[in-house]
Image 1: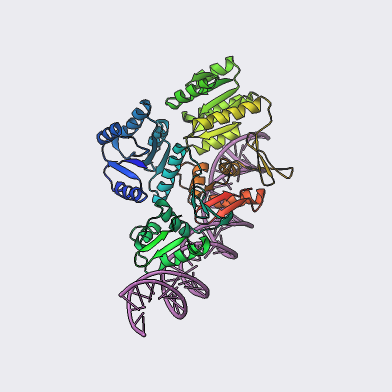
Image 2: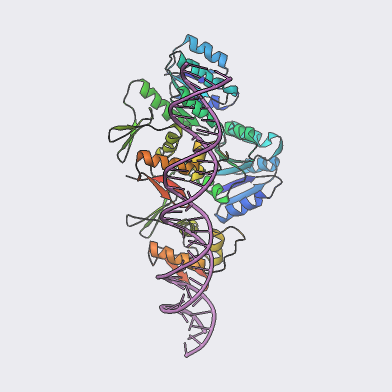
Length: 219
Length: 219
DNA sequence: TATGAGCTTTCAGGTTATTGTCAGGATAAG
DNA sequence: CTTATCCTGACAATAACCTGAAAGCTCATA
C-alpha cells in the first residue's frame, strides 16, 4: 500500500515510517505542507497519515483542499490529546479516523488496515493457506472447518508470515516482529512458538531452514 | 421523505444535504436553533438530523422541548466522539438513533431508511442472535420471549458488535465506541460491561479472545 | 435545592490463560 | 562420531480477565 506520512519536527515520524515499511507499505515521508502538496500533485496515495502537530491549522487546510478538489484518499489524523478542536475540525474536514498520542504502533497498524480495507471495499479479507483459512479481521483461523484458538503471540508470529507469503524469515526478524524494538529475548522463544504454532496449525505448514530461519510452505 | 437538517458551521452539512437530496428526500437545512424552531413550528417533518456539534447543549434542549411538547418526530443525532455525554443525554432526551463521526454516508442512509420504515409503521428490522432477538430501532432485546432491559452503556456495547457479525473488537475499539476517542478510561470499565451484558444476555454469547478483545459468537 | 432512583465508573481480590525460560532429547551437517 | 542447531514438555511468574461491591454521577421530581 502506498502511504504518505506528513509529520513535522518530532521523532514519531521515524518510528511510524519504519513500522509501515516493515509491514510492506510504500511510504513517502514529508515534513512540510509544501512537500506534501508536491507529493500529492504527483502521486496517488492509498492513505495519508496527517500529523496535526503542524502549526497554524495548515494540516486541516490541506485536508480541506484535498476534499474540495474531490480527492477521497483515506486520511488518518494523528493528534495530541489536548487538541480536541483540531480533531473535530479534522473529522469535519473529511478525515476517516484519528488517533490520539500516545498510541501503540499496533493500534496504528490496525487502524491503517481497517481504513484501507474499508476503502478497498473488502471488509473481511481471508487468506487461504493449504487447508487453513485465516481471517485478518476477526483473527479467526480455521482448519478444515474447525476453529483454532491462537494466543496473541502465536497470532503475531503467524501474521509475520502472512505479510509476505513464502518469504524466509530469520529468528531475529521474527523477534523484531513479536517484540517491541529493543526488547531483549534471551532464550529460544521463537523456536518454542514455532513449535506451538505447528502443534495447532499442522506439523508441515512451517518449514525449518536450518541455519537461516523459517518459511511457510508454498502451496 | 421530509427532512430537517440542523447543523452549524461545518462542511459535513453540505455533504449530507446533497446525499439526502440524491436519495429523493425533501431537505430543509438550517444552521441555528432559532431557524430550527421556526421551521419546526411551521412544518411537519418525518425526520430530524441533529448535529450536536452545536455549542452549549442547545441541540439537546431543542430535542427535549420537542418531546416535552409531545412531538414524536424521529430524531437522529450526529455527534463527535468527544461528546459522549451529549450522546447519552440525547438518547435520554428521546433521540431515535445516533451516529458517531466519522461515519459512512451509506451508514447514514441506512439509518435514515430504518427510522423512516419504523415511522411508516413497517415491521422493525431485528437481528436474531442465538436465542436473542434484537430490535435495532427500539433497542429492545428479548430472550425466549422475555424482555431484557439494557442501560444506555450496555446497549452501546452490544450495538458495537451488531454492526458486523463475528467481528473481533479490541477493548480500545470498544472504548472508542462508548467514549470519547482518546478519553482517559483508567479502569476496567469495558470488562465490567462485558460482564453485565453476559449476565443479562447469557454467559456464552460474548467470547473473550485473550490478548485481543471480544467477539460475538457466530451462530 | 434537596432527594432518591438508577446508571456509571472505579476499586480490589480472585481466577485463569499466556508467557518466557530451561533442560533434555532429536535431528542434520560435516 | 561430533557438533551445532532445533524441537518440545514442563513450570513458575505474570499478565489478562472477571465480578461483587462501593463510590460517584445525573436527572427527574418535589
